[in-house]
Image (tube, rainbow, N blue to C red; front, side, top):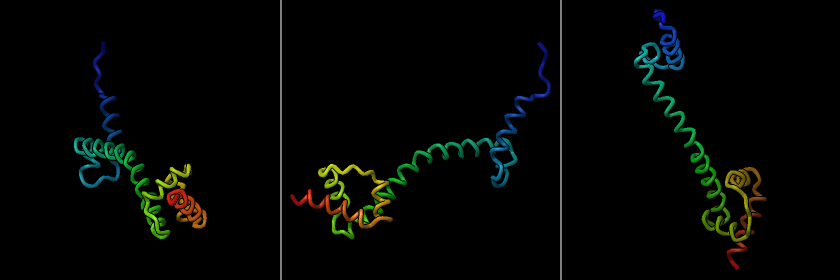
Length: 119
């Protein structure tokens, strides 16, 4: 078997890493060793934060719903409890959208939840 002399596979791998490190500051975009570490860490953060983004949005929706609830004189937890008892199944994303964009509809949901809780 003949001996590889040009190291094409190695060169292509290095080129791929340096291409991913484009835009990094200092040696991190031009030096393979530091670029490799930076890209690895960047890819790790990207993977982790794609998962975290879901929780961030849920937190945002809950904050918006809670603020709108308090304006109606009820806490977030009591609203959710009332909605469960009333059999209203609206997810938090849609409920937050109602609270921001369609206030009368949100007030209707709150009044139904309050009615079930007072009985």
